[in-house]
Image (cartoon, rainbow, N blue to C red):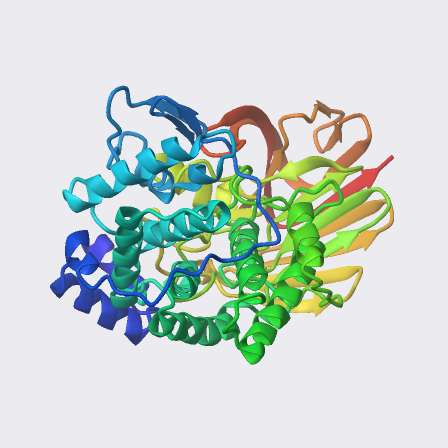
Length: 524
């Protein structure tokens, strides 16, 4: 009980006052039924929005009330349960988002049926209104109506009601990417229904939040490449229609473009040559659009950018002719909303000739439980564990209590170094330095104290590994890795998260050492 209280107090101490204020406010002011928000239905005219680009969508609706989300299929049979929780909240959220209304092979009549049935569940309280899925749902339905020039008074009233709900309950209790999605929906809905109040509210949120959420090097401040791509798509989508919107403000449009330019630069810098992104923090495949598609979308909108070197995000990138390395010197962030953060300070990901070699265990679930705890833990990343403890206290799925602070001590092109204080209770600072050469990498780890450490190093499932001696291993017949100063090195099987709810068996190296360790990686 005392342990739980300590975690709660440490977590809450990082919250902003506006989060606490709105948490209390929203607890006392309960969400009304959708019918109550629909009563205010009033608009001057419907404005169909004009988009240059029609994004591809994953086929998640399989027909006859069958869906597949997060690599889990479900057949509802005669009637869809829109509040179906068997596979967790994220699966249900995907059901609610209604991305499938953009699938070309589904008839318009079937799309209208699905939308109407979903709104029946909301009106009957079988499904409760929530701002985040409402935001994504509104955007998808308005896109559909704009593409097909549809006019359905019942659906329009429901969409209007959801926007009214959003205008009254934006997610200031959470902030982060949730509040941005609220703003994107309010802007699009305001333009669609000619509602200047919603437009002004959306603009205000974005003007305030983008200055904070987009860092100087272009990264989204939640430091997840997956969420960065999700928000970048929303920015491009907004610029796409807003630039042609008759009542657009040129200064606001230019503000959006400047932020988007930086985001594109960061994405190019973090993306591997084969198109992959490092799965730092909560990131998984097949959730967001790929980097090339997003960059092409930006260029189709005549957005151009200079290169902004990686900096404030804490991520670093080194590319040579034979390898690509991405290093995580980032902080737990943002401090007041670290829901997608992992205890992964000083970790790294390595590719050789466009092939992943060292990866992290990945993200396969958002459901609170053993697997979620494991994937956020320090031992699931390519870094050092001391005393079998996490660097930062990740807990309850999306919370972080005590957290490590990372300090960069050297930031040259071929030599970078940093330390974190996540083990200060043990009197330990973990120091790690990378020395990059064209055909080899040296990693120096030091705990600055006579204490045992364990370096975990996760191999991609497609990699082969052969032990040549007690300290030397060969990977894929082309990479030699030597652990100088190790006490013991073992190979252990682990489950690599190849997307949500999808796993592949792989191997990891467990390197035990005292005080310091030198890892030498050479490429043939």
